[in-house]
Every structure is written in C-alpha cells, then in structure tokens.
Length: 254
Ligand code: PGA
Image (cartoon, helix red, strand yellow):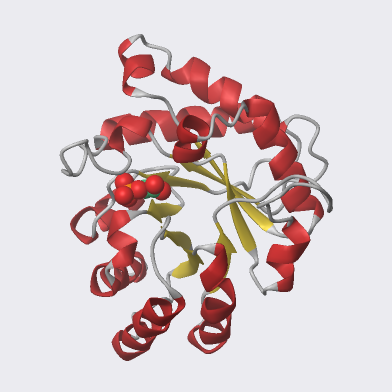
C-alpha cells in the first residue's frame, strides 16, 4: 500500500474544492493500492472532509501552531484541526522553512503537538541545491530528522517526505524544476531509512518522495526501493492528473 498525498498549498476556495471533488467522484480513480490524503487550506478542511467520507480519502492541514490555546493571533491548534475532521498535518515543508524561517526545534515542537493530538504527521525534509553541491545532503537530512524526532514518545503515526528543495515547485520564471533522478531518490531514501534505524519503533515509518511528481513519473518513482509513496504539489491541483497518479499506485499491485 502506497501513500499518495496532494499538497494544494495556498489554492482552492470552498467552491473550487467542491467542484474538484465532484470531478474526482466522477473519475473514481482505482485507489486499491493507495492511502490517499489531501492537504488543503484550513478554510477548505470541512468541505473536503464532508466529501471525503464517501470517497475514501483523508484530509489534512498544511501547518499547525504548537500550543494548546492562547494569545497567538492568526494561528491554529492541532485540536482545532482535529475538530474540523482532518486526520493529518504537514510539518516542516520547505516553503515554511524558507519563507517563514521555521527552525528544526520549532518543527520538533509542531510534530510533538500533532502526534500528541493523535493525528498523523507528514514531516518534510530535504536539502537545497547549494547544500547538495557542497556535498551536505546526508548531513542536512540527518540534522533535520534527528532534531525533528528528538524525544518524541510515539512515532507510529509519523510519515516522512523527502523533498529536495531544488526539485520542489517552480522556478522564478514559472517553469517546473528539474526532478531528482531515480538514483538520487534511491540514495536519499536508503539514507533516511538508515537514520530511522536509530530510533526505537521507527522501522515502519513510510518515506514519501516529493518534488515535481507527475503522472508520467509517479509509477516509476514508486518502484524505487524504499519509496513508500509520493507527495504531490502542483500536479495535485489538476484532478485528472492527480487521479492518474493514484491509479499508478494501483498498477504496481499487478
Ligand atoms: P511540487 O511540490 O510537486 O509542485 O514540486 C511538492 C510539494 O511542495 O510538496
């Protein structure tokens, strides 16, 4: 069973969300090979949850604030997310690390509060182009993972996504970035699995790949050893395309 997660980022009103899922229901992709998760804006969570109950997918948030309540204007707690029916929270996405300067310790706090609330967490890790050029990929992955997982009591609902920053999203002129090669993905995933052996009960933590995943490449990516699924940004906004990605995981069962 693979995990296919779509990260809508800051896109989709409630109306667009409804239209998306109407279309999705019509396409009815074969998801026998996948656990499907939609990571939607906070404002679309309830709408997505109501539709998802019949369509067999889980809904998640893209961020959380690590406190139970209080004077944190503009922020949202894990319990509020849970209250809307979401089951998953994305933590440490590279856009949050860069644009909002989130540190490894802050990400550890977020992860703790998501897992404490009984929700699943998808932790994103990955090196920048410069770090890869400087041969720092393994050091960065080791730091990001060990700091994020530090002193977490229960990792049973944790998912990790390897997302090399240089492969995620678009370039300044709007073009898709160069995807990682199969070898680069295989090496990073094998290394992440090795890091995880250092944590008790971390053996079954799924590791997804993210960065420019499309329906033409998703099947091949999910065949790479130690790749337990994909985290899809841009391509998850197009319902036909995302449905094909889901189908590509079912094709692996044959
Ligand atoms: P992308 O984004 O598929 O558009 O590269 C992936 C992500 O940000 O999770």
